Every structure is written in C-alpha cells, then in structure tokens.
Length: 552
Image (cartoon, rainbow, N blue to C red):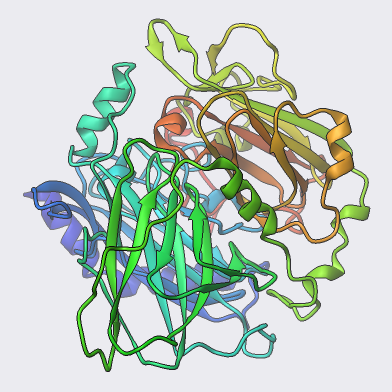
C-alpha cells in the first residue's frame, strides 16, 4: 500500500520534475538553450497482454504495448521521466541514439544503476546531430521478452533538405519474434544453461496475424519505418503487390534502390517509401522468419481507403534460407553521398575511405559451455556483469570492478572463461573492426554510442587481403550489422565519442549469456568539450552507493 501511494504521489508531482529537469539543463553550460525540449512521463507496469490469444504478463508503458512513440527532431532535448512500478529494478536503453559525450544516459547496466522499484529516474538526452528511425527497449533481466519497447523517430530540421518529397503518412512497423512463455520463464531457461525454444510466432506492432491495419489513400506515397525488435530471429518484410524504395537506414540516407522484400536482422531499422499504385482493395503486409525451419509467417493489412474488397489469395512468399540472396541485398544498400542528413553538408563530404585506420580489432563470437552451462562469448570471454556499473566505477575510480584490457583485440584460440570484459580505446582513434562468425547461424552486432561504415562482408575467414575488396566510397553508415554464417563483416569507425559503450549481440539470449563487452573510449585530458560530467540526478548503487554526484 505504501509503495502504491509513493508512486502515485510521485506521478502527481510530474510538473515539479519537469521544471527541475529544465532547471538542470539550463544551468549546465553545455546545453544549447535554443534547441527545443520534449517532455515525456512514463509509468512502467506489468499488465495482461494477449498477443497470441493467451494471457501473458507484459511490460506496459503508460498502459501501452508496444510503448509510446518518441517523435523529435535533430538536436532536440529529450526529457523522459520513467517511474518504475515493477516489483524489480528496471532500465530503458535507446537503440541507435548516440548520446554524444553522454554515455551516462545510455540505459544499460554498464553505464546506469537500475531504477529501483517504486522510484523514478529522469533521462536527459539530446538527439545531437542525428536523424533516423530507431527504437527503445528494456535492457535488464530479459524484460525485452515482455515488451516495454517502442519507436524513436528523429526528423530532420526544417531547413535541412531531405532527398524525397514529404510522404502522405509515416507509419511505424515494429516486427519481432515472440514467445508464449512469460519472460521470467525464458530467463529461467537461460539461467539453467539451456537454449531457448523456437519462437511461437511473429508480431507486427505487438499484434498477431491480421491484427494491424494501415490505412492509405490510392495514388499517394507513404513512409514505413521498420524495426526488428525481436529476440532471436532475422525477418523478411514485404507488401503484396507493391515495391519498396529504401530511403534511410538507422540515420543515414541511402541510394534509393527498389526492393520487393527486405531482410531486417535483429536490432536493425529501415525506412521505405511505398506508392499506393494498385487497384483499390486490401493487401497483405507480410513478415516471415529467415534462416529457420520451420518458417514462421504473420500478416497485417494494407487497407486502401477506397477498398472494394478484402485481401485475396495467399500472402506472397519470400526468401527462406538463402544466404547469398541476403548477402547480395546487404551489399546493395549504399550511402547516398549527395544527400544531407542531420547537417546541411552532404553525407559524402566525409571521405571515410581516405582515412588511415590506427588499429584493427577482430571480434569472434562463440558458443562455449562453461561450468556445465551454455554461454556465449567474444574472443573467448563470456561477459558477466559487475556489482557496480562500469561507467560509475570508472568515474569514482573504484578499484577491482573491472580490468582494462580484459578482452583481447583478437581471438585467442584458447578456452572460454567468464569475465567483466572491458576493452580500452583512445579518443579520436580510427579503428577497423572485423566481426568474424565461425558459427552456422546469422549474427547481429550493435555498438552503442556510434555508427560505423560497412566496408565489406563475405564468406570464409577474413585476412588482410580481404581489404582489397572493401567499399571505401559509399558503404552504409549504421549502428547494427549482420554477419552471415561462416563469414565476416568489416567496418570502419571513428572513435569520436568519449564514454563507456556496450558492444553486443542483438540476439537477446546470446547477449544475456555473455556475448557482449564494453569499449572504454578515453581521453587523458578530460573536458566538458569531450564528455559531460556525471548527471546530478544519477542513481548510485553497488560500491558507489552513498557517494555524491555533484552539487546543484
């Protein structure tokens, strides 16, 4: 009873928190007072959901599954006051938002103390120099399997040209595999050292087959922002009788190629334009699993406003297990060199291929059994969380929480082991990262705080000679990449964002069981120019409990 009173008492104080957050922003010199503020107040609860017709315990934000959409513009200040009404700690992370100079707000356990039950935390973020289609999700305790995710859009500022006419409408399409089991049961399976079962279904915006309608007008063009928010499975997206023009990938405008279907791997986001150029009726929007046996398929309805009939015929088929098809499509996705993104200058004015790399990092995923339990690892190290968030321990110089260099730049070839893995890196270095996949499943990798240039992907073992085939002109710039079975993907990445950044598998079972680590991008001359100070409202826990952040 007292916990309920405290929550709703806090909710009634929302306006006070908003003014406090605005005050904190205004008194800090690094915030640009000319950039708009967008305020959100979220209450996170458990609630009954029925996506597959059976009752499940879902995570709701303001009673919604999926959660509310964040819609902002480049450089907007985003203030999200999150009340945790769950009976356990909770965090939200922001997939694709770079948090320039501000890993304090990243919302993963390596950077943030969890929000305790019955408490709140206010994220103070800025969509600095970004545009694009992204999403947020709960990052702790396998909560992602219960929901709590939603769309995060960053639009261009009014004076920045966009390389396509304004669409008649702009739809979010959150796709992902789904399990009938509650997230607590799935977590228990992983904690017991076992693999998850095969998913039960695929959802579109939290709905099963034909549970979503997208209404359009004949002859007009619409934008669809597609994100794979699932746990374990690559997906293919297509619309019956229509083609799609790809225009944006995770904040980068693309060469506007046309596709009949599009592979969307775990954690990835795409924007497509679709012209409603077919007879007035209803059509299937189809999502199916890739590289699985059996193939799971679900549908939504694209409804023409002048529709003269319901959907007809079977849903159109798509690719199933073909690797080469997907690889060739991935290679066709290129950076639009003449388009502007968040800034007025063209994307191609940054000549990434003319810069010499200063370091090569090879990251090999594996699936070892350690102490009799299934784990996943990077370069032989299976990540285990520390008792204190790494960023906070680093700030307070708390010894013994982690060791820099506890993961090597190259696979060791030795046995796998458990470790709180942190890799050291220098601010302003320019690195080549090679993701090497020796396994027979598609991998999906994400780097918080950054985007990177995809310079190459191919089958087999990467060698220095592989560089001869790199795309050094218009490789796509994104934050999540796939690596095909027995294959490699290489990226170039400028280390221009100081902080503690999570590098992880987007397969959430693999991430949970250790396929992740942290990259500490460090400058020996700390300055507000390079990194913001610890937030005044930062939650402190573990060995940092009881310390002070900084005075008001």
